[in-house]
Length: 160
Ligand SMILES: [Zn+2]
Image (cartoon, rainbow, N blue to C red; front, side, top):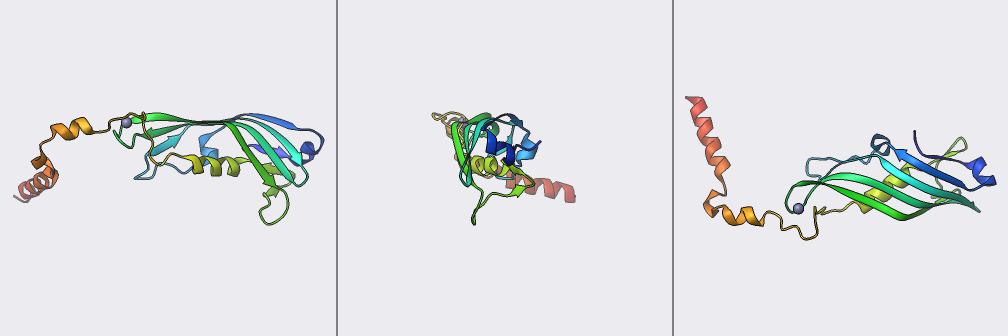
């Protein structure tokens, strides 16, 4: 179920919305080959919505957990994006007017846009993460390209 606002209803009273938006409905499109942010859990929202002249004002909280790989140590961890003071204003007229279907406005694009903007570009399991320092120190320098040599040997074996 998308998160929608019924405009007629909003004329008479402010609305309170809370619930969960399934990750597949939010469609953040995560998990590309080089993406450190693998996937997202369901989005939790708790919002107050009011009408002001020609726009809709939304205020509240968005919270979503993201499965990430640490940019330094490559270990998987859960990053929680907790936007406790989130707000947005959707214009109902003009060039940047929000799309109205029937009498409903879908809030999903607003959520998606803001979450995508706030995704960490270098997710860290911990600010003090030391990354792969330990492993780099223990590996001898001449072991830097072992895979190619072994690959060549395997090729040679298979040709025999
Ligand atoms: Zn780390």
